[in-house]
Amino acid sequence: MMSNPWEGVTPVTEQIRQENLGMARILVFDADAPIRNLLREVLELEGYDVVEADNAYEGLQQSHATPTDLTMPDIAYLIAF
Image (cartoon, rainbow, N blue to C red; front, side):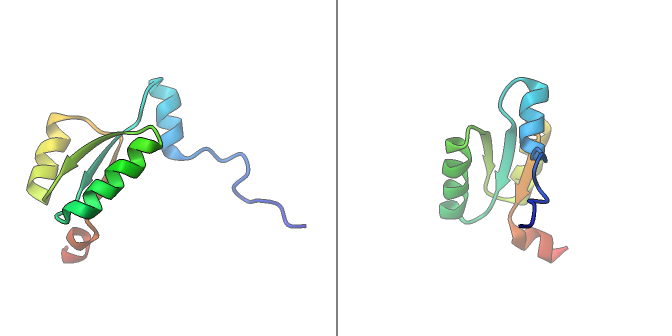
């Protein structure tokens, strides 16, 4: 039987949680409100603190105003550059 290659590996967000002794804060920015809301709901259910923005400009402003541990941009922004 093959062993699990991920056994013993701690996800980065869990490491952040352990180091900060609190919730990892994730910035989600997406122009599509239903997708942004779904991501927020799922992440909050998993115990993350979520900051939202509806475009790249607002996302940059949020990232400067509220330090985050992880940023999840809209994939369309990444493809454009």
